[in-house]
Picture 1 (cartoon, rainbow, N blue to C red):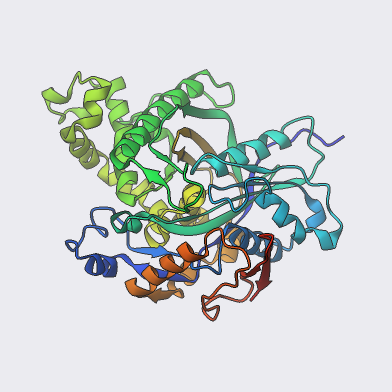
Picture 2 (cartoon, rainbow, N blue to C red):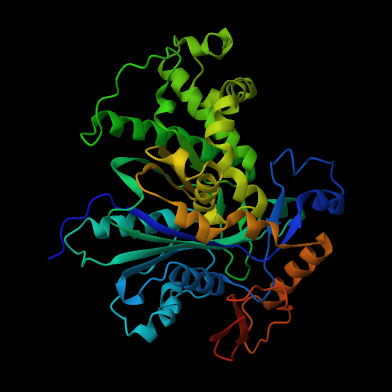
Length: 456
């Protein structure tokens, strides 16, 4: 019997984003909107996108095959694979089953796990399932792979700047350098229709934008509250000693944070919202001495709509946001919203931006949100060297070498995807020359909708 697992968490990471993107400032000109509407108002710089050559199967195949290759992993050492995605191609067959072809040459078919979905939250649910499996009596001593990936695309041109595409694969196991803090999490689930995909004839979601932001903010509040309750009750961490800094608040428990990022501007506001929660819990803290009297004693519903609350706490949180969170918006601002992969792309950007030495012993808070809604705040502690991860990912090089295409090219790719959606007897028409070596791409969909892929 395998020994009880300790320090379960992330042992290796890989990210994939399409090798083509569009500049958001060019999109502003193309759509005839005011300069800065997307780049400043949303905090978005570039956006990855796909044509009809890439889909969730190809993204997952590319990412997992790269993870196995870069870290020289024995496929037989994997006992669980689970995929979180909201970009399904089949209402029955899972993306995980497609990934099994990567393990066939090793003869490993004894791999548990399947797909899990709830908008952008599926990857987190898959991660929790993998961690729980390893910590359970069902564990057979092998590692798990968690995959989170999506293609985010919208019908309305005004919403298209909030799209994106990408995939993250995580190797999960014991004695991990990025260890999930046991027992420290807070979750919030609720029945909402803020964003959903009920029209099976279309790739596009149905979105109530303002309501979705309200739901996200409500989830931030609730998850933070529940996390703090678990932290107080936890026997896994020592009692927090009195801080020598009289302005310290509960938010300082996290050395860094990564958020699900529909837009980077929402991330900045959400970190400020956590500080507002600290203010509500301890309004006499000297850190909040500048908060005006009219902002004290607001109800929850009033605080959600009060722009003065938002502005005040964005300003109060600014310095620590730049230090603790800003590195985590690198991937979201340069790739866009990758749905399930968004928060894990943010985590990769944070690790890359801060670096191995500075991160040792630090705690990272991770907020995951999926519309409909499902959300969790959890944390991990850096307890080992991650230099090899950062070298293998080589994030900045890969981001800088992408092909930056025109808005016209992006618009054409959107129309190509529309024409290809749910088609059989279909041969993709998009060019493959921009794909990097090792990239899986769709080559044909036969009359029974069976999909065939090739590798560049």
